[in-house]
Amino acid sequence: MFKKITVHTPRQFVPADLNTGDWAALAPLFEQLEQQLSAAADASHLEQVILNWEELSAAIAEESSKRYIAMTCQTNDKTAEQDYLDFVEKIEPEEKQCSFRLAKALSDHPHRDNLPPRRYVVFTRDSALEVELFRPENVALETETTKLGQQYQKLIGGLAVQFDGEERTLVQMGRYLEETDRARRQEAWELVANRRLEEAETIDDQLSSLAKRRNQMSANAGFPNYRDFAHRRKGRFDYTPDDCLAFHDAIEQEMVPLLRELHDERQAALGIKSLKPWDTATDPQGRPPLKPFDEVPQLISRTQAIFDQLDGDLAGWFQTMQDLDLLDLANRKGKAPGGYQDSLAEARLPFIFMNSVGVQRDVETLLHEAGHAFHTMACQDEPLHSYRHAPIEFCEVASMAMELLGGEYLGEFYDTEEVRRARITHLEGIVFVFPWIATVDAFQHWLYLNPGHSVTERDDAWDGLMDRFGGGIDWSGQERARAKLWHRQLHIFLHPFYYVEYGIAQLGALQVWANSKQDRARALADYKAALALGGSRPLPELFERCNTRFDFSRNTVAPMAELLRKELAALKG
Image (cartoon, rainbow, N blue to C red; front, side, top):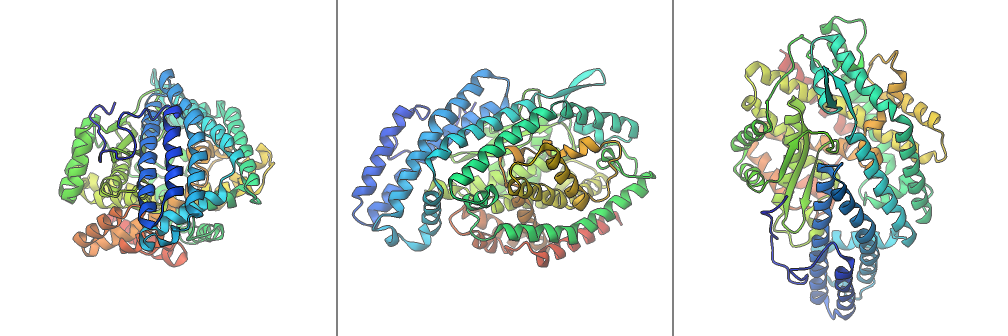
């Protein structure tokens, strides 16, 4: 894997032959950096030390990414698993300790305020935050939570069921929920739900173990609860937990009514008495599932054709990923669930991981992850590793906007009528996801504001949120599956409080799409210019450069809900 990959810029400080998986080799470089910081006589010298530090950070980050990618690509590969765990246990804790000392030395440095202010405002702000929140006793706890998260991925990635006489992963079973035979959809859905429920006690225990450690981390850092600690640690300088609660309200007021409208339409079209959870993915007109491709090479070539039409830079970047074998898109047993884009920090190149099985959602996912990849490509020339990735709230604008922009060219996969169907499916999916985002985020608020809760209380809290945001699905007879539905959301386990960002970003992406309807060339130029900034500017400025508003109050949610309502009405004729 990655045989063709080389560093983007030759190392100046880090030895070319450094073993970045060996702490004994890394430790002297951190010692040198501390000495350089202490000796920096002016701002220019201090700036050079920062560049050296960032070069080392990139080298370590690339090693981490390679090991994570190898582990998720084959969770049953014991060597890959051990390599990943070795890095988590032996490198990351030591690096965190050293990075803290460097961040503290920078924060206390007499020439820190003489650095070019606009250039380093984000870097010095983030370093100060690291100093504020670092606690040595939390390093071991963070290692433990990472290992627990890996156990969750391994468990979920290994689940399979027997269907049609063959063993199939839970991801592969998703395609059967699109079939027109309702009894067959129900069978497929129940097989998956029941297989997951067989592991419910283990998964509940995993979350309880994670929450215990996270609560301890927040207490160690002097916070009243993990929610407030997590928001602060994520560098949410531009919004608060209360803003998230107001966002939940806005979704309830503006998106949930639209969701109910769509569910009512679906129920009427299907001619059923109530809408069950296995009825939400099938075509309401009884047409067979969309089949955008048979094999992964078709998915890749047709997506390339979309980018060829959309923009020359994007097309070139996606072709580069193919040339360098930076795509692993097919589902298989033993592969971790979900999809992601990771960056190889020294090569300054993206890698896309997916579990495609030949459904429309795979097309959307590849467009989405390609948007992330384009973000990585757009800021390749940024010298600071820290600035080559943006806050998640804007990273997801890059990906979600690409779903919408690329969705205008689905003729590469379908005929005209199927394009209409696919676009309806995509836009309805955006409507569906807002309430789900609110449910997951509100659930995490409850989890960490109520430490010591029982598993039953946890299930009841989830059920209450499903009542609030669920949109009218009939769960009778499936109450236990409903109460445990959150088990499938890996963010709750691996990335706590990383989910509301999707909602914030979706509002930004919808604005990019709205802009493109007025002037596509300018919207794409603004999009690429904003991506090229990476994380070098505060979050509101990134949104502004993209010609969008950083706002997720009802003032923004309402017009975006209306945009979706009108677009769907036009597509449905």
